[in-house]
Amino acid sequence: MRGYSNDLAYIHDSGFTGYALGAAPGLLSLLRKNGVRSGLVVDLGCGSGRWARELNRAGYAVLGIDQSPAMIRLARRIAPRSQFATSSLLSADLPRCDAITSIGECLNYTFDRRNSRPALRELFRRTYRALRPGGVFVFDVAEPSRAPRSPERVWSEAPGWTIVVEIGGNRSRNLLRRRIVTFRRAGTSYRGGDSRTESISRRGSHRGLDGLRV
Image (cartoon, rainbow, N blue to C red; front, side):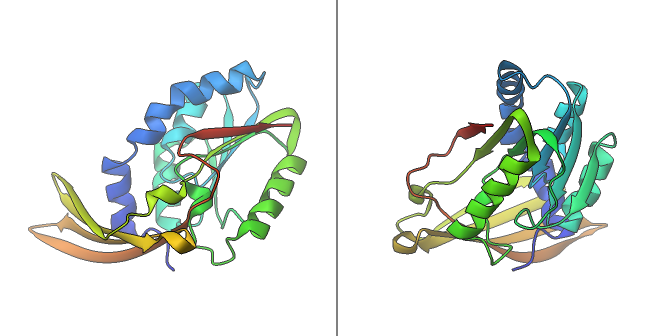
């Protein structure tokens, strides 16, 4: 399954970064409360770099990792003081760092088909080994109820783009699927695109911020 294309990455950054930006003050407070007031933060699933930029403004160094080259290109422009790498979060090299974040349900996505409970357990082990003593891992996940009982269709628009999302899934298998159709202005016409995403919801979790401290 392909990651975010150029148009979908652009639309996501243009219209759907409110969650990460809204969470930023609380995330920064959480880091400081746990004694992480400076140093390197690794952001897994960094997207277009909006959270990385907030971290830079607060005095942190950032390494952002995302599997979408289109997102990484945006991130390098939006957060030029950060470093970025294109990689699956399940296999990315994690340097010694002071905190690791993963915001936006990145741990649920199956762009990397290896995503499974064993793969996530190994990611958590690697996270533990990468964090300095006192380091913090902050993440959010989607719970099983995020998969609708029946298919849904929603749409959004802004100057220059429109997006239609068909949402379905399989609750018995904890799967959430989205078909995303995009229309982005290109000169005097609109260019269409069609993407699909799949997420594995995690039982016993909630859609909010969880954290582990080393």
